[in-house]
Length: 277
Image 1 (tube, helix red, strand yellow):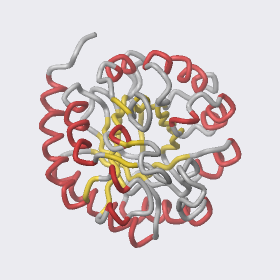
Image 2 (cartoon, one colour):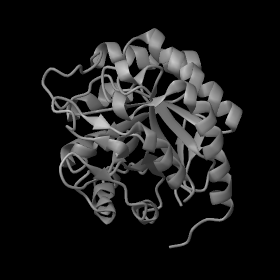
Image 3 (cartoon, one colour):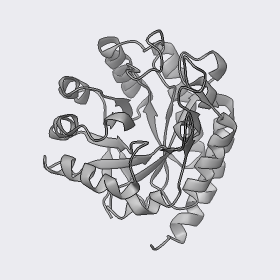
Image 4 (tube, one colour):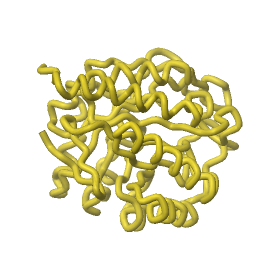
């Protein structure tokens, strides 16, 4: 089983749960620091490890009119400021090979979006930076298909890899999450992450934007954590219905402390009694 060091944290399938959480996209420095601060406080109280996440650019919005975020230059300044002020590792998405080097200078974890998880040049460029690479499993891939994706990053000599389940396409505008995929991806040895919020997304479900069923995000989180995963990925916002993106599947910020406390109880039981496949 591989342990991935991220700042002062050690992320692995046999270590205490890591919560990766934040807004879908960066809105401002004050907003990012507010969410990161409240999440850090909640995770510390529950005994969870914490990584702040937010995107500087939502490059795969449903509609051309969708708000995309602050952009790479301003976004990296905000992420760097959050990292220094709150004292937590930070994660953000990358979309092209050209972004990898500059993003790796600021963030701790670079995330490969699900739609791009088979882009060999992007995976290789990301791996070469030496940063931790979190790869979201494409909605079109089987869990065992991620073995080939892992090999692409490993070819650079970088074994600081995490694998994220975010649901599988099931008909039009619908995703399902097959929990069998979590222990299957864990057979790679790398930390496995459950994306509890995007797995309840309804891609393109509102015509010009995606819908979602946020009430089921805690269900996904609890189910996954009970299996003994390394991390759970949750998008959160103080006012999801007025957030610039992915509001329908984000959890209200004031509900997060109770959820994290519950997840840690599941995590302790799961880690004390690991599943063997």
